[in-house]
Length: 233
Image (cartoon, rainbow, N blue to C red; front, side, top):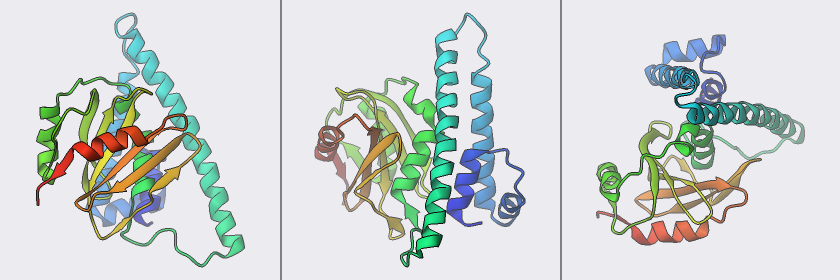
């Protein structure tokens, strides 16, 4: 089981009993850790959905809706992925969509948005200083205000430590990823699926990736972040 199939499996069902998944976990400590984290996060979501009524009723309803949307989207994505795989076999395409060890920025960005949907629900109301404290580990910082910051935390783009943010815009919340550059990256400037669209910008030291709904225009926020994001030499 390669890295892409492994991540798709644990994102779809962290408690899967697939024998190939068990073998992959037994053979690779990094996969075992990622599987454990996915299970823990899934358990936390289930616990969060058990908030008693009436305390926290609004939060519970939001979480339940997001989980239902996640399941529906996951089923649709699995169907389309299966269709795409069949098409590749029938047509006999000669190019490679994925190479061992390669980090597909678009694939990982969309997977994080679906799996970490809580990021679009919470409001941590972070200051620029708090975000820059995290960016400092990448040698970066925002030199001026970028607007409302709802969420910011580290995430894993296939063993590349990255920053996952949710930033406000006139059109609503937009997910932002800052991923340190690596030779193993597969870079796509534009990408989309049935629900989301994304745009990526290569800034040499890191890739800036924005993901929003199909109705949102990402360019204004991209230009704002590009103008205010700096990296040390």
